[in-house]
Length: 199
Image (cartoon, rainbow, N blue to C red):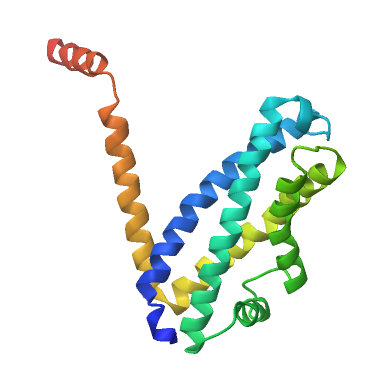
């Protein structure tokens, strides 16, 4: 496959998806941080507290999806900017060298294995599961930073991709606003209109 197949538009679509996934990841991470503040993120809580277990599973799912999609976006961006095919490991090395990826290859590979460790030991509970979750929470900061760095890089180096992603996100936001308006109780809206007419 040539680098030209990975078009700027394709990268823009993936960047928009990545931004939406980031919102979900940050929301679930905040939930876990709140639980930890309340002292409810101990190894036994992952076994005996359904709310904690559910929150942890949602976060780990988003963590794995976010890293996977971030990796694809980095790979495509590096191939496009350097105008050559690359193995993923070479793309990540270049991204690390130019300051996009604030983690080395070993950390990146280790973070990919965290979801596997968590899933494998989920029903067993205990320290392994808890350790994987805590490590993922820690590494999520680096992934989010890498995402910010990638956005800045793409905006400067691949402006077509950036514009595509922003148009998609703007369209999604308009759809969200229209949906919320459609769910607004008509009685309240009409009541306000009648009050305004009477005034």
